[in-house]
Image 1 (cartoon, rainbow, N blue to C red):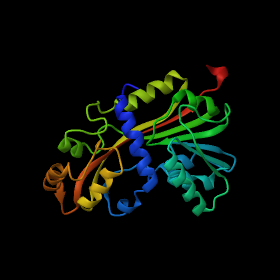
Image 2: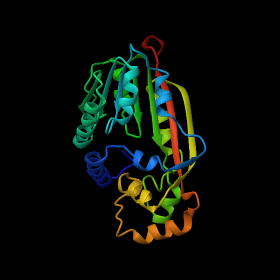
Image 3: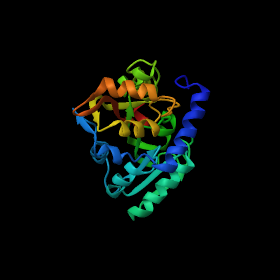
Image 4: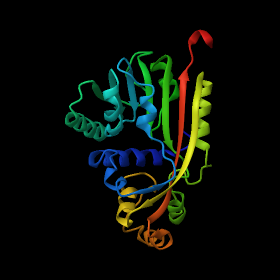
Length: 262
């Protein structure tokens, strides 16, 4: 892909496996203390609108299964795939704790989804990469695909202080435009699209360090080596509300068009 050099892909996969073995994608530890100013996307409420007790759903890049396990009670069958062994292990542990019986978690890559054609009613992908042609293949006619992604200017002030970051040199809407183009080229009808840029305040620098240590916001982040940037960040963006930054998100809801209408 043109968005990551090979070494960056290798780094990201290794990093992803490390996070999977520790927390999955569970950031509730700091989310409870974080203050948000402005509207946020609620993935659960968005997806629930398209799910019922007859629905078969797939979560691409399920991570620790945190989001899938919240939506699964509203569905008939719920599946999650992830290419990280550690993430799937964490997800299966979370599933065991949940007691849900309609969920299956599978080690698989989004480029090669191990299901038959037109198996799912709803496919969703939250903060993970996906392959549009594979989504189209496993979705039923008139099936719904929902993706909520992190925009390239997420945590923009932090990236500017560090002078590097995930998508640091990319244009603001580059990823959103790419996905919209791929969906339209594969005969998906766009039902809804939108983007939000929300102000966030993190309680303290410990929460910022936890965030940077467990996400790819700042590639190769190291507390000791990057200490000078953390000092600048603390001095420049500290306030009574906390450490100020932003959350950039975009949403796309699309529908697979009936074949006989193509």
